Amino acid sequence: MGDTTVNMTGGESEDLPTLNLLHVHYDVKEYIGPWYKGACLRHKSNKKILRDITAQFKAGEITALLGNSGSGKTSLLDVLSCRTNGGVSGKVYYNNQEISKKLIRQKAAYVMQADRLLSKLTVREILTYAAYLRLPGNNSKKDIKIKVQKVINDMGLNTVSDSRVGGLIIRGISGGERRRVTIAIQLLQDPKILLLDEPTTGLDCHTARHLISKLVEIAKRGKIVILTIHQPRSDIFRLFDNVGILSLGEMIYFGMSKDLVPYFTTLGYPCPQYANPLDHYVDLASIDRRGYEEQHNTMFRVHKLIDEYLDSPILQDINDKVMFETLKPRYSFSYRRLFVNLYRERQNWVFRILVAAAYVAVMVAFLLRLQDNQTSIQDRIGLYWQSVSVASFGSIIIAVPTFSNLPSIRDVFYREYRDGLYSIVTFIAAYIVHLIPVQIMSTLVLSAVGYW
Ligand SMILES: Nc1ncnc2c1ncn2[C@@H]1O[C@H](COP(=O)(O)OP(=O)(O)O)[C@@H](O)[C@H]1O
Ligand SMILES: [Mg+2]
Image (tube, rainbow, N blue to C red; front, top):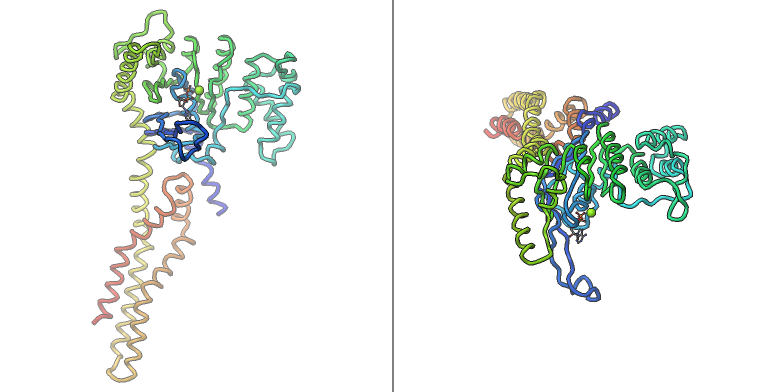
């Protein structure tokens, strides 16, 4: 196993991770009625929180999820971080692997909205204690010091690293700095994916811009950064690589931020000259609940926008990319390749036929000497017993060297299994199926002589 583990952990895909979502739906069960009736007696209804979300998040890019309150931004982050408490359907892949709680715990960090920091400690102390808690025990004191210094540099906290954080009563570092400390704590583990729920809420616009530019720097170092944001200013808009606009749990736009205005302009909603495009289009995607008529009109508009997006070439393009990176290699290509590879391992089946042929030769030699008397009956029974068992013993003789001594199949299997290309069951099924014709042939050869 020693040599194979080295193969398994490396790999190109690891360097530039991609997070793919394909037709993701998220439903929760809601209980309607007074609480004292309990879960069983209350009326249950399904609430659709997210509908048919297809998206791609790449390393090195920062993506902002926008939308009115209640549009499903936080829920989308919950789905990505496996923190949901309801039914999620559809596929979420990290590289080629379907995400699980365990995988996300290794790869992602989630920065919650509130900063909960101990007020009497300095920034460096907070980060050092967090590092002791979060990093594996084999990190030495020196390693921890280096890692803490690195995140302090990354989040631009050098000037305040030895100041007390402070709280409501004692003044300490500023709001923007507190937020950066919260993010720095999450960066200690060097996550591949950074998820942030409303990181700029409560910050003034200059501080918010500074924070986002720090996040852009972090993304540029090969991480996937996804954040939700409530009311971004237009100068922040230019910092994002991608934006997603949600409304009623559905996407009305997901794509590059530079394509946002051209896309809505083709739909007949140009952005007024001095307006902030993000504000303008988030407003367009929101429901006005002040009156019946307004609600009806805005609802109609939002549904039209959702339909337009579902038919748009932008979504088609993302869909193709996601399908290419997730489904295709999993089901058709790698499966077929596995077959071709197994067939090309000729030893596998040529040996089987040779074993059968050799046995036939022995059997013929044996049969020629058989006579028709009492003792020869016993010889015949012995011969038939051998013929039945030779097929299965033959398989064992071949299977042992194939999987234990021939390194190629075994190593390829371990590597591809780790990359999530196929499961153990798939491999064994393919292995068995590709041998069926050979098995039938060798059995036919054997019985062609034995029967007569
Ligand atoms: N666990 C849950 N149970 C019931 N409703 C939920 C749950 N999580 C989210 N919701 C509902 O889903 C909608 C979207 O919520 P959320 O993702 O928090 O919106 P946003 O972050 O965009 O403001 C809201 O209407 C919210 O009430
Ligand atoms: Mg939210």
